[in-house]
Amino acid sequence: MGALTGKRKADTLSQRHLVISDLHENCMALNRFIRMAEKTSGSFEDIWLLGDLFGHADESTGDEDLTQTVLDMYRILEKYKGPAVRGNWEHWLTHPERDGRNKYQGKYIEQLRQRRELLGKKNNKALLDWLARDTVRVYPEQGQAEFTMFHGCSYPCHGNSDYQPHPCECYLFPRDLNIVTRGLFGNENNLKTPHFLFGHTHTPGYFTYSVTSMVNMWQFFTMDMRNRPISYGDSSQRFGINPGSAGIETRRFPRTALLLDTAQKTFTFLVDTEG
Image 1: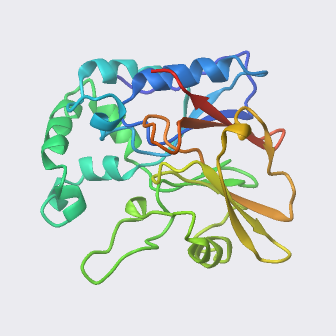
Image 2: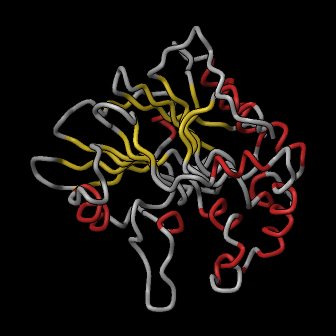
């Protein structure tokens, strides 16, 4: 893949962003979400990536190996280039020395080897270099930052004496209310912005933290929330939003993504039921 130049559509608003997580090599779903977001009022300008563009193709498309066709279709990301953070798969792909030390990474050693070989080719290397570069990003990068982006967590919030995971390998499950309250909303060292975006769990929904009562709650995505803007503009509330998996449908959740409007202060869940 050549240089990611980040070409933008001149007729779209700069405050509308398509947020994608856990695509897992499902490039057809990516195209459908792009078409879906383009049809909304105001369309969108760029794509924010929350990690795990790679891996688990057996669950997303039924394929075992990554193909050059998938990487060629990922070139559409050049047109909509926005901020990206690494997922655990991007982290594993760029740290082969951990294959024998990380039992979770070691489970997928053959898949990792095949993908490293293909992504190591000259025309593909820039894609992985870009996706694996950052663990945490904030938006906007200048001025008053509003969102922190990460895949698993911004700090190693889970671990034991046997293995200390990288932050992108950690999970924030709906049950982790105390970790989110104390470790993120209550700790400026780990979260310097009012809100955050995360992925990894394939569980669409959002944490809502009350600044006044200091109570944190989780709201699961339900189909009646589809295409319905949800406001995050109330300064008395802080949000931690998971767009869900754009690439893998589960028994409980469809493939989902997020349309974030930072001008109107809303986020909207998009649902892909095709394929």
